[in-house]
Amino acid sequence: MEQEYMNRLDTKTETTINKSRFIAYIRRTSTDEAAKAFISEIKKKHKDANHNCSAYIIGESALIQKADDDGEPSGTAGVPILEVLKREGMYDTTVVVTRYFGGIKLGGGGLIRAYSGAASDAVKAAGKVVKTPVIPIKITMDYTNTSRFEHFISETDIKIKDTQYTDKVSYLIHVKEADKETFMKRLLEITKNTHELEELDVIQAESAV
Image (cartoon, rainbow, N blue to C red; front, side, top):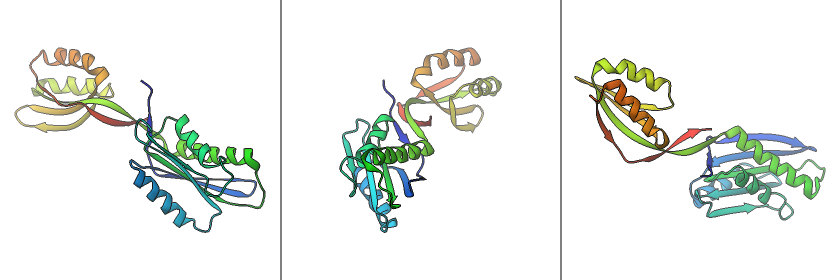
């Protein structure tokens, strides 16, 4: 299955090309309304700029895709930004690139490279997260097994989300679906099948890439 990503952080990057300033903003936006609101926010912030060009993709299946040249020659700004998002496999993400014209025309090819490069810089600076199916599991065991269990967990990417101490120790952990079989086998070895276990519904967890 092809991985798809969302940006991890709101981020701003800036570059200057032939005296024109290109300021790129990226934000996670899960709805069409949120994307439009973000674009409006940047346009208000940079109302004195020559152009505030934008693109966004909403939904894991990328059902909503929008691009706006905001006065630049058709196809030289919004679409290049959108193509970066598509190439990077990103969704629920909006990029706005603000341009302050420096007096030197870049031409169609130059504009495409400038806006594409600005969008790429923003994506790189923001970082990405990928959604991974994980199984929340509640495990209760005797204190005699906790040291070996926690040592085992520390050597994996399994996350302990909560720990409770009573007459026994209870852990809430998140295990990737793909790692479940290996984890269960090791757990049986550690506790000699003396633990109690409750498996919850699969959730989509986010992890940085």
